[in-house]
Image (cartoon, rainbow over the protein chains, first blue to last red):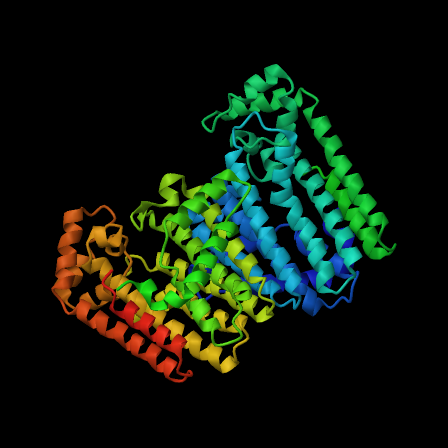
Length: 320
Length: 320
């Protein structure tokens, strides 16, 4: 079962978003255009636009209005990936060379800036001042999350709350805001925005935890990037944090360096998988997923609600 | 005569902006806070806030409203400096080490992102949707200017129009928009926004040309960074472009590389100064300055207009 089967009734609108994304990154600068297009064609699940559109169904849905919010959120996500690649020194994303690997860090930085700017520009088509405040505040939080990630690298004395705050800022907030701004852009009632924001936040937390688990349980082929990348780069993810409860495993983890060999990384991954860290991480992801489903309980029962529920369940159970 | 003597009647409001700038970059992340504060304390002329405040005087001036636009524009400028330093591999700005030199490129990138985001967030206090559209569009153009600068490095076959478009996007637009958004945020009539936008654009063009001249005519002590930096980095500025009309000088210019020694750079600077390039550059700067003064002719004669005129003249004649 593929994710997009869950919202096939949105197919025409998703195609409209895809077209609009190409228009959005058009530029008279050939370098910029090439760099952005490259990123666009690498694909992605477009899960943020899907959340925008579904949430907008709770109000007065007009694709010609709502599409601006959907494009804006996807551009925001794309821009953060570009800057993420600069920071991660990543050479591959979704199995394709990153912008940074193909050009260089400087072009990647300005391409990211350009896409961020385009994202904000698109949102100005939504004539609700609140929408711009929310989006720019989200960008502020996103940056704080990124800086925290740099600061917390190889910091083994951190707590669960550090990790949770980081993934809130880096992932969950953008999904929460996709739901919220979808609802706002179609004039849905405030009570609905708030529920959908919480739903998106909980789905986002669940999603990122699964992502962090998969970094340790999937193959390079499934991930489109080397397994254990987070570990290698000193990102202390949830399973790593849990695994450190076992002193011998902690001893192995804190010896990981950027210079560590693939064999060393593999042996640390196996040590982590030998603990209950993966299982505990799945349990926490499940708790967020359950909360997301509870948030939906308060919304009217209809096709949109069923779809949101199916997507949440899909995300909470995906294998890669 | 110091620049700030020209607008001493704004002293209290400028101090308010300065305080607000400190609030704006406050963060619970110590790294981010330190990096931003460092930049703030390096100072600067705060010329963009001054243009915002002066332009706002053409409408219903309320410092508690207008200050958000002023802070936003200065933050926008600061963020672009941070990213500029990443791209320029600059180690000094205004005589102080850059964020990049003190920390590293990654922190500099996210600090810039953070400040951009804060800039956009501040502008959302101005309850005019047009203001957000203008600001995010300005950021789009700024990025295009930066990418063009990378692309045009060491490209000796470029034309005057390439240079002019680059400095428009990199410098003049942000000054134009400072004037425009100042006027918009105080509800000044549309005719006034447009005049002030043009005034700011022409002042900005004049300003950047002078800046590019000073890179070749000032000392390291006056500039706060090594003389001939642009030349060194392959940025083809107006005087360099004009000097290339002399074949022997062009021959020297196209041999400049990042590895060139300070002595080689000095000899190329002297060759350029031996042509009429500096004089012709001053003449073009003067033309923009004259146009800026013409734009003011159409505005009511008052203290604000006299001040704008004095600032424009000051900028057009500054020695460093």
